[in-house]
Amino acid sequence: MNQLVFIENNEALTDSLIVAEVFGKRHADVIKSIDTLSCSKEFTERNFSLSEYKDTTGRSLKKYLMKRDGLTFLIMGYTGSKAAEFKEKYIAEFNRMELELQKLSQPSYMIEDPVIRAKRWIIEQEEKQALAKQNEQLQIEQKQNEPLVNFAKVSLGSNELKLVREVAKVAQKEGLVIGEQRLWKKLREWGYIFKNSTEPTQKAMGSGYFQVIQRNINTPLDTRVRTTTKVTPKGQIRILHKLHKEIKEQGAIAR
Image (cartoon, rainbow, N blue to C red; front, side, top):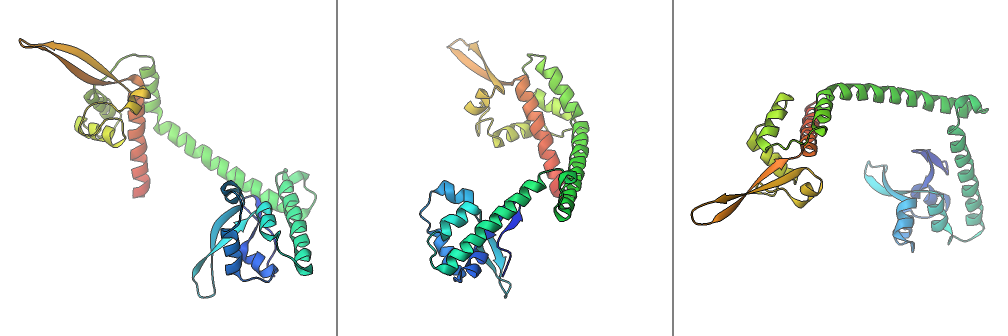
């Protein structure tokens, strides 16, 4: 018989395969029972998660992972002396695993059990390595983004509005190869500018990225209103940030 309860992603879990084996049921029937449980969607999402396993022929088949409450809800209708016996064993095993999880949250030097202490020490070393790697990556990103940060400081201290072509020129100075027409295209792709237009969307206006300047043009026949879209300092920073981010993502895909 498989271990009744196991630890995965720092949680005590069991699965539908183990339940079927323990209670002598067909796995297909256990799956059907889970799929038709009379519980709320929130309870199901919180206590059951869909997974898969490979059978003896190598096929990938459906199974469910479940927490203690999910298991309890599923097996509460199982009857008989044998069912009662295994219910008790499941409860005891969940208690044991959850206690072990609590111990694994303590520093390794505070744990008396040598096996659990060794497990916790390994986790601590992995956490340290992950943190060191994260800090190293953060330093690299900070160095890469230094020109953008400096530009942001200058822009936020200014009320200067820029035309899109002027923002494109600033982007070029930041090492971003983009012209005015390509930048307009990007703004439309991002949902900042309406398609086939130079008018900002309501979302972009509400975010404070653009201002629309209106001025009257007098002609011999009438007076016409001309509008010009300008980018705010906040919008300039946002645009450069998104351009930098896209370049990084494209570089990651290329690698």
